[in-house]
Image (cartoon, rainbow, N blue to C red; front, top):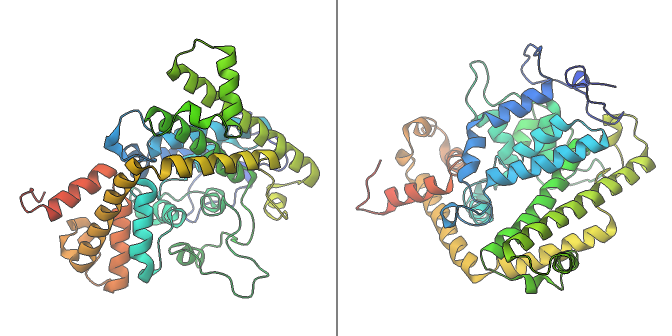
Length: 398
């Protein structure tokens, strides 16, 4: 099949725009863009996407201009996902849309902010960034006159929620409770949580892993948290750094880092494409629906690359995410989020007007959800400024 709007050849198992399950609220089709292109464009034009520029990836945003933010990370994931989808004959517009949307629900301060919200929201249903992404694109974005959210296609919504795999098992007698926000949504709009997501969503999830690991190595080296020498015994990274040094023995450190990271990304992308081709050839799905109902993911790394990926994660956990400089930074970040949450739940009258109007009759549980939505939407800078305004008695209150 060929997509008539962009002449892109699509494999039988690709998500095809003319076979989309549509949007929750009916809208006329565009004469110039497919439904998945429109999804991508709506995500790019959303307020939540713009705020990613000032949300941290690992470092707090003001720590340095050259470190990744959620925005730069999302763009890098989108580039990898789109390239892989194109090679595999998948719908690259859907893959790109999912890559751009996957971090919309992340709160400020990266994992530290998410951990703090999980802890504070535990009595009120918990906090999950994937569920929060769904809330952003189905509820919290307020742009259109006739509906809340972005009214994205079913395929984009299911990809945001299920890109890591099924959330429930049809054979499980007592499934784990679904994250806050997801259950409420699927009660009215079935996203088939017992199946896998599309091949495009699976590729976007693996692309996130590729970008995250490699760019954290890049940022960690440039921040001085560890050295190239520390990486030389790490699978994948070590041999590639050795190879770059052998090819360019006089290369300066900055270019050596860039070249090695570039080669690592290339190696992981090649492995992802090769293993996905192997799985697709074995499964022989004839439609996107067959991909969803297959017994295991059709996209993924080979066993060797999964082991390399695990080794990289272990190295980064020990040498970067638990580095004392990051521990100090994340400790402050957690305190900021917890302070804001506890104060605003106790005193919702301190919320800005547009948020306070929804807190009046919400009850304690509803107020906590409202405050979590408010904090999750903050940038790092906004959270720090709000904390200063609320806790520094000499600071201006607005």
